[in-house]
Image 1 (cartoon, helix red, strand yellow):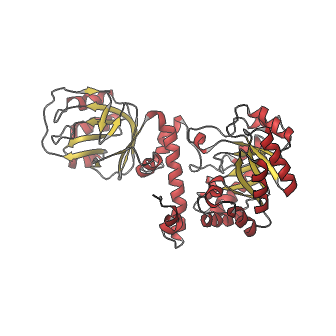
Image 2 (tube, rainbow, N blue to C red; image 1 turned 180 degrees about the horizontal axis):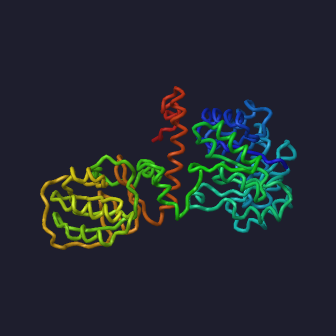
Image 3 (cartoon, rainbow, N blue to C red; image 1 turned 45 degrees about the vertical axis):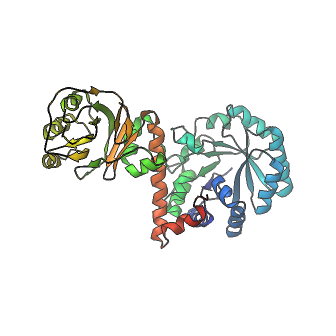
Length: 430
């Protein structure tokens, strides 16, 4: 089977999906998928609209059918779908009914292996039932945790003779790998539908699929444990907060210098008293290059940090300091270009009495911070990312940024944010 590029239109509203579909087709997309979010929000009218607009293209209805296989297949086929997905975890009777209905109404069936434990065995079973395609699909929530979409692809390709589709965070860099691993159908969502220029993005990926030559990219990919810092460099603190469902922001603490770059690092936590700068300064000895010192000074007004402590950090390579309390010597700190975030600025400092702790759980700006949590600061403020969720949050923040990149381009075309997002339609009722 000649390699196929399938664009997955995972939008909430049909007008946005149609615009991107048109661009993707111009860029070389072969199959057009009405994604599950689109079908759930717009119904099978999305399939009808795509079929009407692109009569010569294969239309895929990503129903992910789990029950009533015959009825759902009939509905999608009558709406214009050429290929309809059913979940491979569904029971055999549901899949068989979908196949029978597909034969009756002129549609083909793709079994999606998402959620299947033994993917190789189930792929053989659904092939025996009569499906036309199997799809190795790494879901978006698994992608955010860094799961490789190609782990099982070669093994499945060796077990079945029907065409295999691959889906899950594929971009211009990884698309050739999908083909090399045994896929005939490369399903791409975000790398096209979130692109500033979907037509160009589709064109580049189509070329990668056909030639086997990928194109390196920092976007539309997922980052692993050893790339967390790099991923956080690509996003803003608002992106990160949005990725955590509007959580994680440290409140009332602002940057004291104009940041030329983001402050990113693992937390060294400090608990101290008003004006007692002993433990904050001692924490510098414990900090490693790239760490961020986070200090809970009780939100008080006497400075526990200044120029000389900042110089110590600068020389050692500490990434910055966040203080729920006061800092002084701002003029000197600005000159040395060392990132300091604080609640207050005060000329007055206290004495190094040594009360408090280093490395304990603290509260800074209303956020709990533990040693090893990730701290990111920019002109919009500071966010705290729990260490065990860092990979997921970094990838979700990139997803937020990429979606915003696409929306920005649609606004530049002359539409307002409200129009693009159809806010009057999607406001919460009740």
